[in-house]
Length: 275
Image: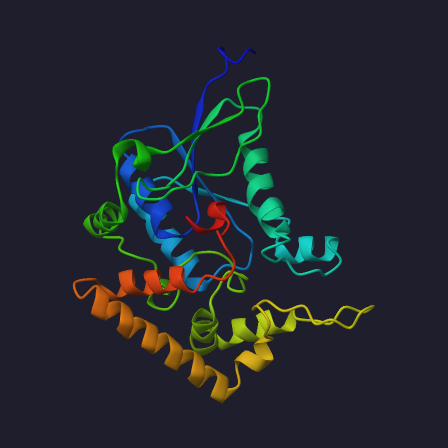
């Protein structure tokens, strides 16, 4: 079958975050044969799974969960228990991009990506195949929709934001290395058992003795000390107050997102994970 003869598929990858969810809502009545997928690492927040159930009910179509047989722990063992990091993002390649491309197959397929018009970035570069491969589509950019529009789409749909937005501004694994210190504190206080699980992954290298940690320059055992938690909270409070004085009309979720941008020490996060 040639590329012209092959049926073009329409696929929208959900991350459990606000932008990809808003895009699914936005496209629901525009593309009848849309396929919805979620690359499940097996280490997502409970709030993410709960939110996806609500999204699935709203869409009236099943969300296909990928990685059912090869979760994070499988690939961690394959990489010699070397934790992923901003410089070594094997988790994104193995748990997000690879299973998505395997699901799509040889194509052709349109991949709908929830990057907004007010963002100066594009999605990952897809692989190509003789049948056309994956063709990225950016409906929000094409329509000129910005953050305020995405918030309105979610509010009008009745879905609102995922519950983790009360303390965290990105979807992804509960131990994601892109989390800020205050978000680790949020995990500690809201999901202490997951914090302990994340801490259990921090093991010393058997040869060098170097302790590989999730949080930059600090182990989770150090971060959870009461005096350290108090300092992190105080720093976040001061930053929030500063943002409030600059943008008095902004909602709490907007201010929290902006403080996240100001304190991001790692550069651009993995877009396929966090949209």
